[in-house]
Image 1: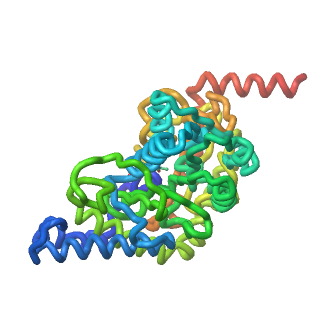
Image 2 (image 1 turned 60 degrees about the vertical axis):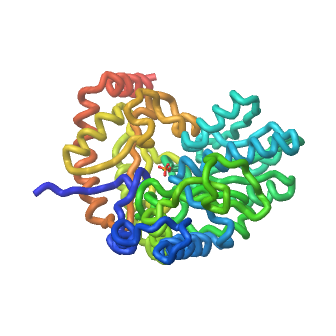
Image 3 (image 1 turned 90 degrees about the vertical axis):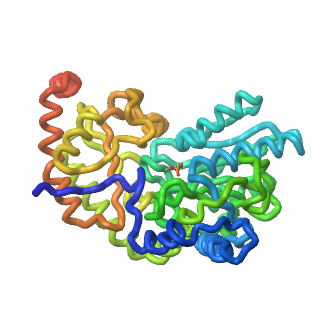
Length: 399
Ligand SMILES: *Cc1c(COP(=O)(O)O)cnc(C)c1O
């Protein structure tokens, strides 16, 4: 039987069986609407509030600073559009600072705000995939309403200097949002110590269910509503609560945060072993800083290889991987993240992202390593680009 290796945990994760078990009653017999007043609705209502406590505790927030949403994308949209519009209405502030390599849930939200008249500055992330705090500080203006910098990048896994960024924002009185969808459950987050005002997360990235997320919003920070309607979530996010989903995100975040250290230690060993071995393939490189990096993220380029073909051949060997974010696959443009760290188009096309997870073993990594060099050779044999690279190499040696 062929081996199956799932190495795309940054795209989504499995629903943990113990999380599903906690959700089950709310998918079946406990179907009451938490907003109803009769006693049949008491249990679902309590379950939602318990999940709110679990989420708050995981990031050192207060329970009334947590709002449930339909996922990471909604949380990003709400935080950014809500704060920008509120700050414009109240204080005439019109400027937003973010980075070139945010998730599209942030970048496309900023594009929408530009059409409303906002000005956006996107910071460089340099060849190591890290924002430089001094460049952020220099970009802050009198009319800066919001800074939005992701906690950890979804493609190259680089972890930003969040605390320094938070301190700078606090010093200048600018609201600070972070898309922490990739970081929650993988690194320790403390919204107080890091001076974070708003933080986005998504259940399905840490073994919870899909279609449920949360936004942490510091007391006193008042983004405009994104979803108007009923009085759910203290009047700030309308819609009947996704009770099973909310129970799931609460249970999932609690179990993820409890095992961060042991998982980081185990997975960073697998990651480093993988990268060291794969770097033995000629004309390969690791993308993004190797130290300030999510414990389970591998992102590499192999010159003269086309990422999509590489994925298909890995898939034929039972391996699920990615060459960028799931949202961009299917388009022929190379990843904006890889371009933002200065890769040439042709190099960025040959990228491979592996995101390991709690189910990944060293044997899985070794299995991928056992098939990868052969696949790359095969693709290079058919590649006119590789021909050219080798010809230029030979000419370079002669000269
Ligand atoms: C997955 C992801 C999102 C989107 O989250 P959804 O819950 O799928 O909407 C946003 N930002 C980052 C960094 C992500 O990895």
